[in-house]
Amino acid sequence: MLQFSLHYGIHFGLPLLIALVFYKSYWLKAYGIMILGMLIDLDHLLADPIFDSSRCSINFHPLHSYYAIAVYVLLLFPKTTRLFGIGLIIHIIADTADCWLM
Image (cartoon, rainbow, N blue to C red; front, top):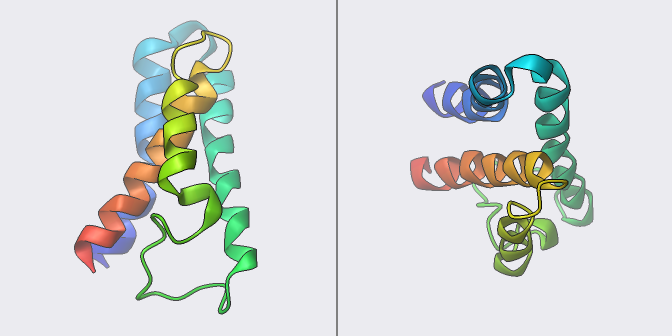
């Protein structure tokens, strides 16, 4: 239960906190863009089985690879991609927390 709460707390709570603190005038738009970082979980469809509770996503799925994470970090620098990059990094943080708690 702790792992579930922590995982989804990071996925949904951290972007909301960042949106409310740093993007007050358009927090809902900022929150929505950061939540789009969840789309990288589509790479789970390439795995067999699609979901395995004992598998660490980091460096297993293509969009969770170290190379992809490096690209997500680069997305933080241009202002136009920053919110999406933050969302992707938050997603990786949530998945990393899962790996640590396994």
